[in-house]
Length: 237
Image 1 (tube, helix red, strand yellow):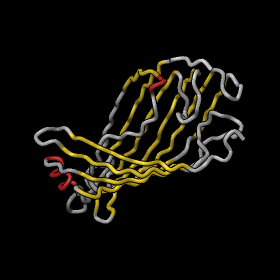
Image 2 (cartoon, rainbow, N blue to C red):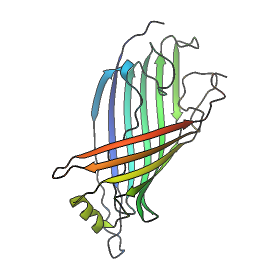
Image 3 (cartoon, rainbow, N blue to C red):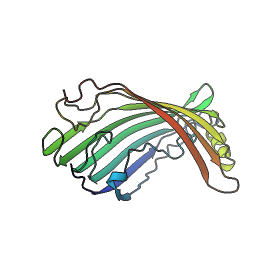
Image 4 (cartoon, helix red, strand yellow):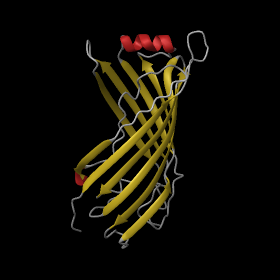
C-alpha cells in the first residue's frame, strides 16, 4: 500500500480549577479558582509522530487536599488514528477528543501523593483504504477510563500550605513512583479495526526524578516506565 504523508494538526485547550486546601490550623482556606487557558498548535509529519504520555512536573508536590478539575480538548487531522498502535497508514482522519479528569493530592504514608481519575471521549472520521476493506469509518463514544496513583518517595513529604510555600522558595530533588491502570470499558466493535476503546486492560509503572537547577527556575526531569497489556482476544472477531 502506498503511504501518503499528511500533516497532523493539534489544537488543545486546557481549563484548570484549583480547589481548596487547609491551613496550618486545620481551617479551610478560601477556595482559589484559577482558569488556565493553554492553546497550542502542533504541526509535525504524521509518519514521525508517536503516542507520548509526558507530564511535566508530574511528581511536583501540592498542599495536601488540593483538588484539580481538568477539561481538555484536542483536534487532530491527518494520517493518524485514535489508537496509534494500529498498523494503519495512508489514511486521512479528523479526530476530536475531550478529556475529563479529577485529581487530588493525598497523604500516603506521610509522603506527598496524588490520585487522578480520567475519562476520555472521542469523535472521529477516518477515510482511505483500510485493511478491512472499508473506505470510511466513523466512531464516537467514551474511551477507556484510567486511574493513576503517584507517590513522592524522596524529597517531598506531605505538606500543608506553609510547608509548600517554603518548598517553592527552596525546592529539593524529588524521586517519585506511579502506577496507572486503564480499564477496557470504552466503545469497541470486534468486527471493526478502528474503535474508541482498546478492549484490553493496561497497567503502566513509572519512576520519575526531578532535579531543580541551583539559582535558576529550571527543573531537569527524567522518567522511565513500562507498560503491561492484556491480550485483546476479540481483535477483528
